[in-house]
Figure 1 (tube, rainbow, N blue to C red):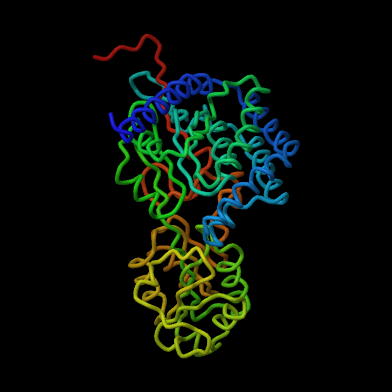
Figure 2: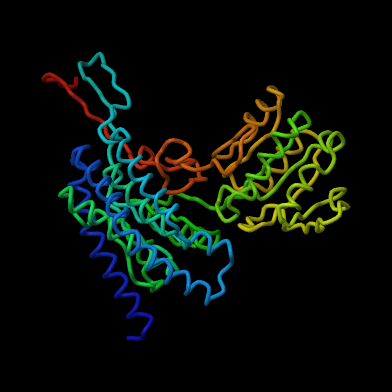
Length: 425
């Protein structure tokens, strides 16, 4: 038996063992009280506060390894934890803890002439498999949202964040233990072997849904290889369109924030479309601000004549840079902007900057991305900002969950049918 086969067998056995433990835990979580789940999350948040130094020490080791491997600044930014970011993670746990329990909600109910009373009731999905890259915060976010929605979860973080994720996972387990919930409810794969990912993707009947969180390469692999249903989060090729009727000062603030607040997240703007009428009226206001902020502006057509810009290449449109780079071009009206986004967008988030209600309505009606915004930064494409406490990802597909995937989106439903000796003729 060669080494590759041995690795595949070991990975399959590992995932099967974890999945069986997760299924047993999921059966308990499905009927766990709202109070016990809340207590577990609050205890996990307190553990993160108490173990802050341990987590930061683990993260420093991951960062040192990432720098040795010459990872990109954007990827290192995703990996980096700071006291402020840890407080944000703990606050997310507390916010999720205080949300209404999504399990057991009566989604609809009705009576039938045959004497039946029918209810559609929210239920957990079962066992989630979350595969992610270089984002240790996902360990807490995904674990918390799975727990809140009554699901067990198997987490496979990137090898670059393995120590950080392990330290955070220990806090999540401490919360489960304190609330007397099964520790197998939130499991972390600590193996760096890529065969583990393949084993998760093939674990039909054991894992109910796979949620990938990462770059195009990871998500594409998951979509092509998975034998388990997938919540797709492909790319964040987010567009901002400055309409002819945009307020220039609002546009300036939004464009700068959408691109520069954090360049390595999926909600960062990757393409700026400028209406020709706006450009004729206000000139290079937006591009000059981006250039002054240190952004590399890859411009097409007349915009490429602006000093400091770089001529755009055809593949710059539809590209997720995850860096301090943006593609830009002039368009003639909202319909041309819509056509461009339909061609090059990834279905994630698009924002229109305009004071014209009719134009905004047309933009919203004729585009079908998961999130559409008006006069707001694409960086708001985040479950926390949507009031979900956190998100497990931004789903860009159209089946089941779409947009920020919070606890409510991690439920399915069942029908409860009540009669009084009812029989069918």
